[in-house]
Image (cartoon, rainbow over all chains, first blue to last red; front, top):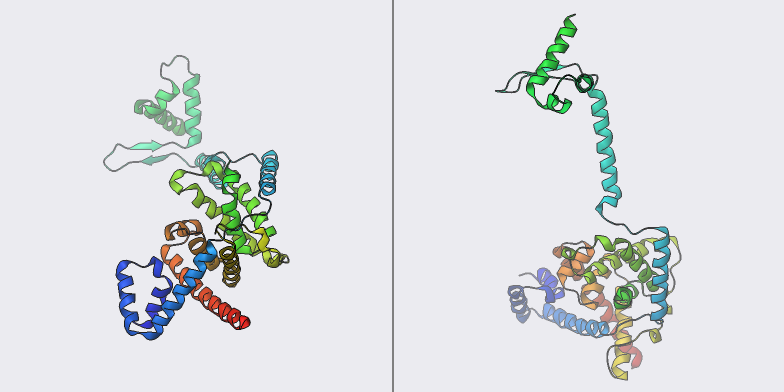
Amino acid sequence: MKCREIRQFIYTYPELSDSDKLLLEDHVVDCESCRALLTGMRQSRVWIERAASFSPEPVHAAKLTGNIIRSITEQRAHYPQSRSWQDNPVFRLVMATCSFVLIVVFAAQQRVPDTPYKPAGGRSVVLLNTSTMLRELREQTSRKDESDSWYVCATQEYCNLAIVQKIKTRNLQ
Amino acid sequence: MLVEAHQNLVYAVAVRFVRNAADAEDITQDVFIRLWRNLSSYREEQGKLSTWLYKITTNCCLDFERSVGRRARRQWTDLDHAQMLSVVTGPDRELEARELHQAVLEAAGALPAKQRLVFILRDMEGLNPDEVALALDMSKAQVKSNLFHAREKVGVMLTHFFKQTKSRLK
């Protein structure tokens, strides 16, 4: 291995794998400059470890604790703590955008004419625009003499076909 | 209580980063306010509470570093050694640790913010590389690379510092 690569090994010695440590140790046996660097790094580590044993603490710890508690109490009065992901502003923005898009699609759909549609291998149907569909559903629900509810009508094929037939008849007139 | 149990941990990282007691106290206060605001979003799967606290602390430290350009930075000389308490025993050893602590912080102070944080968390706070990566949103390779550069620079500065001290004592 080259000295340049070994240099990185020297400074990250504590994080090295056992095999990399062996490579490093083999190299420094024959390389005087890397050996000197390793010795220097070990000395630095001793200094740093000793420095790290010195633990800085706030002079007035109790006063700091009091200030923190007071700040949190003040914050609590102004801002209620966020409760969950539902309060996330990004989530709220996404939900608002989705709602707006759905309203626009629904409104636009009212202007689209009824479209015949035949899925592959399926029966031919007519896609009603939302305006027609809503009107027909309102008519269905207002008819007292019919037993089917608007929900049954919207979900049952025979009922849809009856609506389509009615529209076709009306358009021919 | 959460604040009492963890304020020294937060303060230690902050004071090692900013090297100023008053700024470190401000950062400590900010950390606990952020912690309180986001406590409900903490999940155990995200790691230990202390790791999460380190993450908030490092973010506050970086925010502080960014804001430094907008206002005059307090002189770090007010980090009076008498304000610090030592865990080492014996007066001589304590004095030595204090001097070393000051020298190491001075050397680390010249590092870029992210390198400094990696160095503080790994070499001074003793976090393992995975915890450092989690706290700083870095890959393990980035942690290793930052450690390499940080230790290299700190090592050079410490050697220089001790050579100077030796020649002064002669």
